[in-house]
Image (cartoon, rainbow, N blue to C red):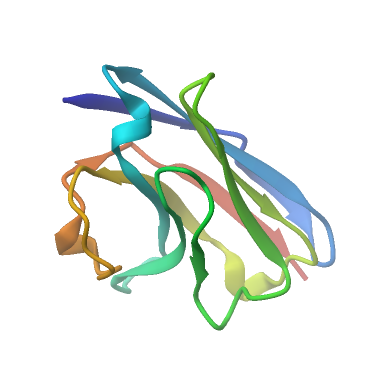
Length: 124
């Protein structure tokens, strides 16, 4: 089992940057594929980015390609989301998620463990 704690959210102007962190506790962080999701008020939780156990394979939602970068440091049991050129439509609660499986399905139901979320607000 793994516990996840996100940090780094906040209020930023459009065009600005933020870097989110997700610290994992528990055993064998490198055994988990990791992802970031986000949920805006009144909307479903959407996939943002994912990385494989070794950080070799990454995937992104079309809406964030070229602006967001996911990475992980297995020695620190932490996954990051660097967000650049932020837009008001990026405003949401951002969640990190972990899964011990080997699926390439990035829907929320395929991830077993979730953090509590961190708010990101982008002003226009």
